[in-house]
Image (cartoon, rainbow, N blue to C red; front, side, top):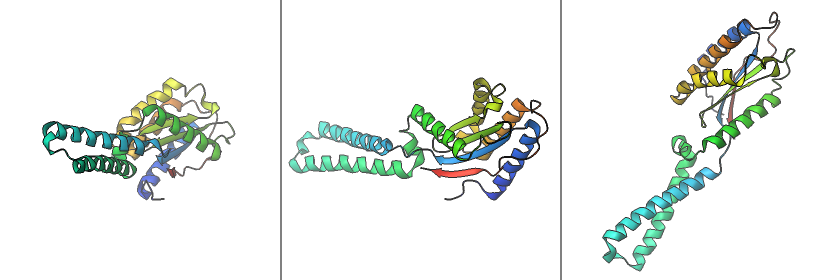
Length: 216
């Protein structure tokens, strides 16, 4: 897949991860995912919208120019609605901003969380001695952020604390500044976890390499 982050950006973030881990004792993993689900319903919604808009325009035309109505015009009208629907469906496949218009927020939240939980398990982020793994995942298409801490952070990273960190990250993500959003997230984890580490950080149990995936 095409890299989302440049080498310079990766090096910067990996250094920030090491710094945050030193201050907090946590094992932090960053993930940047292009898209967490195919959302098969989106092209159909786009088709319906395109056909509906074309149908409305045909109705307006017929309202003012009914004298031009003929069998040929009826066929042209039907054909125009189908073409408009097909074009809208194709656009939804290749233009993310257009496709995002049809994305239901609750569905996106569920898909991104499921993806994050699956990633947490498949990458064995739970396999730290004190269960101090933390996954910070950003999904670009959905504009969603998931923070998944292991049970070693149950007291310090409660839902209120995680929501605060995510809310701080979102403006940067929405403006397309992915690296800045991740830096804000790391700073938020440092602020929340610094001074609460359990003993000296003996070794780096989880790689600082940033996970990049196209998703599905």
